[in-house]
Image 1 (cartoon, rainbow, N blue to C red):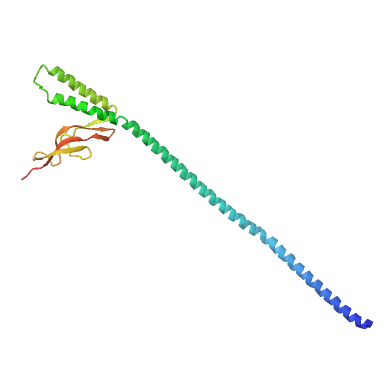
Image 2 (tube, rainbow, N blue to C red; image 1 turned 45 degrees about the vertical axis):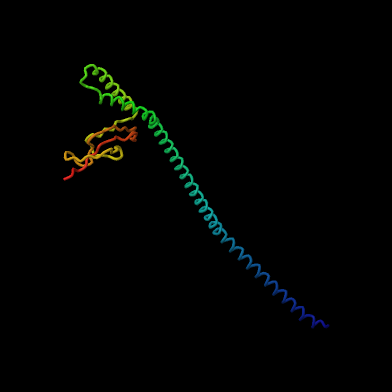
Length: 204
């Protein structure tokens, strides 16, 4: 091959190499620009990621706070119920004992009610029994036992037990005409209802 023929071929190869080099340079520049762009965006992406983590942490704290508040409320409720149970135990521990005393008081009062009050010989005995009944009532009252003696009051089914009903023009209907047996409460709770006779409207 002649020297003139080789020269154009060399020029073609050289041009191709130059073109390839230019393409490589452009690719490198684009890559550098893209890398720079990525570098510029990465702080924003990092901030977004940190913000998301912060929100997640806030939610976790809120959930834990809610759990703590609920646990504290549960503990407070348990403490309150325990205090109420202790208070009830203190108030009503004497309930069984008080119920055992009521028949004794009833019998003493019956002894006074059905005795011969005109008999002078019995008067000192009756006075002693009466003082004993008052002492009993005063003693149990110190522990919250109160007498339910609704003579002349309106009938209350929560504290009274109607044993009979009597027509009456003298009082309004549902009035307690007579107390057959007194009732008792312990710190406001019924121990025994009062047994009573209740009025109703008289027939025309």
